[in-house]
Length: 155
Image (cartoon, rainbow, N blue to C red):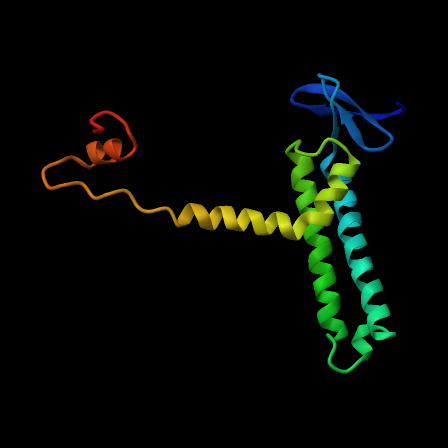
């Protein structure tokens, strides 16, 4: 591994390879956030390229030139949103050490819309949990909450 630079992370110096990965103390290889972002952008762009390829073959021309298909500006906006989402999510995964290499960051870019969908489902599922029961008159609220959670005073 050729060392391009040294990065100070967590108070320690780690060598950075030419590929933009940082070698951690335990031998694992982590991707720098900006390198992960580039791989994520590439993954998202590959999905959009495949979608455009399929659309061109379906209508035998650029889709925005055909009546009844999406307009160019709307198509361009959707591509920009998808690519930025893929890059941003891959950067977040890289910055939080959730991606160990370029292939992982590329996969995050490819799967970005589905990952966000799952995050939203999880968030909405947690909001749909039933509220804790109200405390009975004369019973302190903390005791009612502890009982509902199986704490002291639980039946």
